[in-house]
Amino acid sequence: MQTEHIDEVLADFAAQGWSATPSMVLPYAFRLPGDVGAKATESFFAGRFEVQDLGSQMVLATHAIAPGGRWLDACAGAGGKALHLARMLGSTGHVVAHDIRPDALAELAERAHRARLKTVSRSTEVPPGQFDGVLVDAPCSGSGTWRRSPHLKWITTPASVEAHARTQLELLQRFANLVRPGGQLIYATCSLNRTENEGVMTAFLASHPEFAAEPPAHDFGFACPGPGLTVLPARHDTDGFFTCALRRR
Image (cartoon, rainbow, N blue to C red; front, side, top):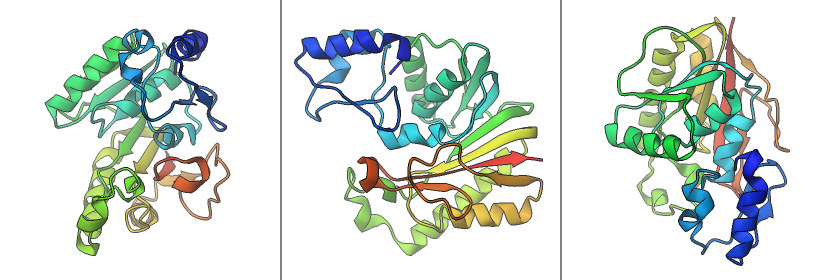
């Protein structure tokens, strides 16, 4: 939710008879009852808030991301994290949202227009040049979303997890070259599988000594014994995520 519009949005919800519960970990996040039509409200059409799982919002909030700068969201999809990143960077920053699927980027364009964000551009091609930061929110097994998508339990296999890990490592290696010296590379999955998370990070760092893992700026009460932070679903009633920030030396 846009912080400057919180009072307006909450008033809109109250007029609908909905009780919005503030998050204990993110000051701009609120939980609504699951059976309400939030996307039919005036505030939603005015771009004052987006609907997104709290865990997904915690991915970027975990890291120290300075305002300004040019960032690449390398696997942007429909752009939930790209929009969040644009808000964090502010009016002096810019996000290039890249995805090979034009339909996903078309949805992102609609969301960015609704949110009145003019600092997000889109590209189905890998953009040239280097960036102050690159986000690789990689395709994964989705085991962190099993509470909402229980069918994934029955189609996730050891072989599919290994295949995802290979793809994730390839994506990291491809997009790492676009991080300028001193810049950030943020890796994220909605998986709770170590093979896709700590395993990928360990393999990447072993072959890329120019990068070093940074401790999270916010751990939200989770332990962080190795590279990256795992957001477990039970603590804050979220989907499960893993994220790690690397700094290019």
